[in-house]
Structures are given as structure tokens and as C-alpha cells.
Length: 423
Image (cartoon, rainbow, N blue to C red; front, side, top):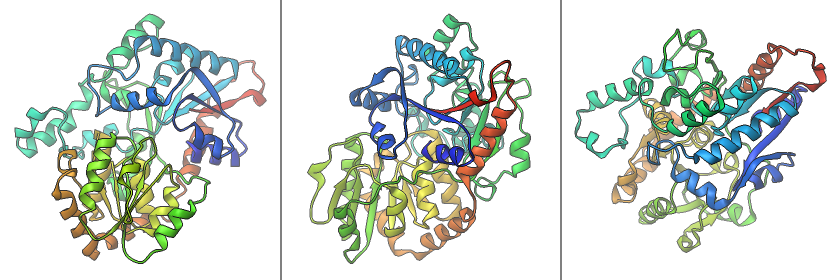
């Protein structure tokens, strides 16, 4: 969101930034970006609970928010949009915006689906999950599992219940499927055609075509890579650690449990390598040693070029930051979008997936050793880096958002009141 915000501002677009609060407010403050908090401010404890309930991690019968929270946030966001004359809302994963934008009558731009968009699974490009959402599915033959994975987004209603109860109360359209939960009116696909394998014209030409699983207004557009370039320096102790001789593994599994991070670091510690850990939300000081440095939120775009292997959950940001630096990656997917992100790079020879069950076993250390000693992984990552070179993902996203805002009716409002809200 910060990258899109910068690109919008550089083009002269009037922008407001809003959030529900929480653990990463410090990032906004560090970047010097003014922002508003809408609705009840999330505490760090509530943010951690939200992550435990997130798509692909929590129970599929809940919607991450309580009905009372959904009701409160949706009404507050819609009022904010009206008060500030917002014409387009842009979000990374503030899912309440799915309802509040409809209540306010404005379009929503999303990018949180990554490449997990309809043309991908309609063409059967989703991989069989490394860790099926239901353990019983592990017994299925892999081709059957892959077919189910590509067919299911259109008919599954996982995580949608609370959204639909509140939508019915407020008189706005509900969320018809898991697929729709991940889509907006304009869904930005933060990748390049060479990696996803779908031509740009075909992606842009996709339409819901009356299918009940999708929002009828959804459109898709490639932007190219979108990842954070936090405008903060590397801490001196991190610089000193990276300057020491020898290879470094960067562990940045930020949207996960502390237990998973601990298990990963313990297994990697069996290797004769140094390990840098982005602790972010977790208190992981107990892992520190002469070969393990635990830090907080780090500017990963400055770290990735200086390490030999990255280990992440496979989120779009961390994967693309690694590839933009030509750094091979081990992904431990926690949700379907992350599974796909890493699988796309597996097909390029630049990454490997491992399940959460295996990530706390010697299998992880064995895989890391293999990737560190096989130069083909780094060569493949460098090839992906060349695909990314010269592609202005944030700029392309900003251009698409501005074009959408320009297409919205202004009614009697002065042009100077038009706003794009990034949440």
C-alpha cells in the first residue's frame, strides 16, 4: 500500500490513507504518511488473533471479524468515504471494504489475491496444495487434488458467512464465494505474464459473464511486481551481521505463529550458516545466538540482495522482494495464494515449497542445504529478476486506479474533492 500511495502522490493524485489500526501503524509513522484510523482501533493482541483466523489458516466457518466488528467497521468506513468524497477505495487485505464500498456506492480496487484470480484456476494452473486445508484430503491422488483445487474457489463459501449476514442487514450484495472474497471491482494482478503464463490481453479481457460465483463488476489487470521498499535504514547490528563472512539465510515468516518460526530456525541452525530473523510481531529473543540474529520489522528490499536464501510463508511481497534481488526462496505456504506464489517460481526453478508439518523437521535443513549448494537455483532467480527489471508495478497500479477514478461520475462535487483512499 505504501508503494501504491507513493506512486499515486507522484502523479499528483489526492490520496487519503486509512487503517483499522494495529501492529503495523509504526510503519506508516516511520514513512511519515498521515493516516486516519476508522472504527475501533485494533490492538496488537486483536491483530494476532486476526492472523490466526485468516484465510487458509483459521476455521473456514468464521469470517475473521465478529459480526459486531464487521457491522461497526463497514458503517464507519462508508461514512468516511462519503465525508471525504472518496471515489475509489484501494485495499491490501481490509476485507470490510468489500461491504463498505458497496454501502457507499464506490468501486473497490484490490491486490491481495496476487495471482489467485479466476483465469488462473479456470485454466487449471493452481498447484495441488502442499498442505491441504483438510487433513483427510492428503490421501487423494495428486491429479485429483489439483483438479479439486482449481474447481473449488467458484463454489466454496469458506469464510463468507459473517460478511453475508452483515451484508443482508445493510441491504448490500453479499460475498458469493471464496473466489469473490479475494476480488474487487478492479483486481490488480501483481505479476508479469512470463511468470503467470497468461497473456496480458487474455487477463484483461476476462469477464464474470453472469457466473454467480463472482462480483459482476470485477475486472483484472496486470501491474507487475508490487512489494514494499520501506524507507528505513538497516539497523547497525543487522549491517554488522550481514558484513561478516559466510552465507546468510533470511527467515521472514511474518504472518504465522511464533511456534512455526521457532521450529524453522531450530532446524536451520543445524546448518553451518548464519540466520537473520525478521521477528515483526513475535517475541523471538530466545532464538538469538552468535549465528542467529533476531530483528524486528526490516526493509527486506535491502536485506534480500545480501543473503543467499530466503525462507518465507510465500506471500506476494516477500516472494517478489526475493526475486527482484535474484535470491532463491523456500516457501512455507499458509494459504492458497501463497501456495500459488511459490509454485509459480518452482516452475521457474527459483524456489521450493515445503509444508508447515515438514518445516519443523530435518527435511527443511536438507532442502536449504541443497538450494544453497546448487547454483541453478540462483541462476533461475536471476532470470526472474530480469523479467522484473524495468517493470514499474506501483506506477502501473497507480495508473489503473487513477483511470478508474476518472471514470466515476462526479455528480455536483468539485473536482478538487476527488480522492483515492488507500486502506
